[in-house]
Length: 157
Image (cartoon, rainbow, N blue to C red; front, side, top):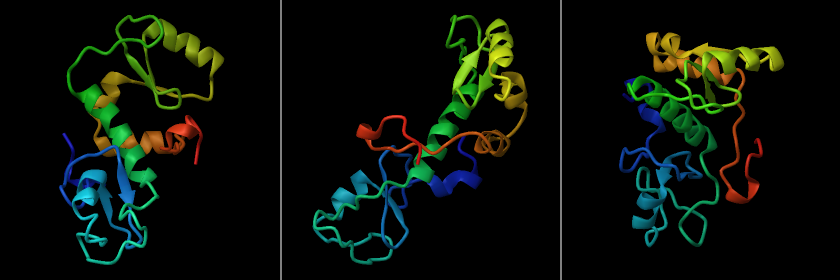
């Protein structure tokens, strides 16, 4: 399901999705697995530029790629044909609010729109009719980048 347009968010070493992508000073992005393999060398496995951190693992997470992966994971869930359930009442989920990051049934969606009029809950069937690019464009206007540091839970960048 990962379209060719989104191959850039994979680890540049193993070409896999990872929740622990690190941004190197050379601007390449590697997962912790690939970095631990080259830790003793202390350089980027793509361009061989030295990594200045003594541990060989940069401190900076690639938050943009990590957040894009999280959004694409939701898109894959929507497209995957699995049953989606309302996060509030557990009835069939027919809408997705990208601001709340919740699936909603019709009744909860109506209440949601009444109290959170600035949020746009999109119909799941409309999302399925579009592309991943359409889905991401719809979420970029409203979603914030969240810090991946576990001690900064739910803090926006």
